[in-house]
Image (cartoon, rainbow, N blue to C red):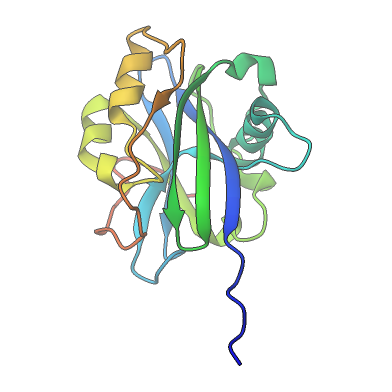
Length: 180
C-alpha cells in the first residue's frame, strides 16, 4: 500500500523593494541554502504569519532582516504580485516599495535558517541590478524597481512572471556588497 502524497505547502509572503536616495535597491545574498553550490539574491521579506496583514508581515520582515523599523502604513500599496512552484510547494508573493535613506543593516533579528542562509547584502544600482536580475529570488525585479524609482507606482499590483526558479543558478557574487 502506498503512502498518501505529502500535502502541498502554500506559503504567502510579503516582500519589500527597499530603495535608497541614490536609486540603489537593497538585496540580501544567499549561498548554499537550496543546494550546496547555489548563490542568489533575495528581496527583503518572508512568510506572512497567521493573523497578519501583508503590510504588517512586510514591516516585521524588514525589521527582522535589516534592523530598520517601518510602519505598515509606510509600505502601502502593494506594487506587484507573483506566484509559482518552489522546492517546498507553492509561493504567493506580494511586493511593496519603500524609499528610505541608506542605512547600516543589523542582522540581530535573523531567525532560524536565515542565519545560515543570508551571507551578505548589497545596495545595487540599476545597471548592477539588471546584471544579476535572473539571480533574484523568487522573480526578476529590475523593471519593477526602475518603474517605481521613476515615480510610476502601480495603482494596481503588477503581475510578475514566475520563471520556474529552482535555486541552481550560476554563482552570483556580491558586487560591492558586505557580509553580516
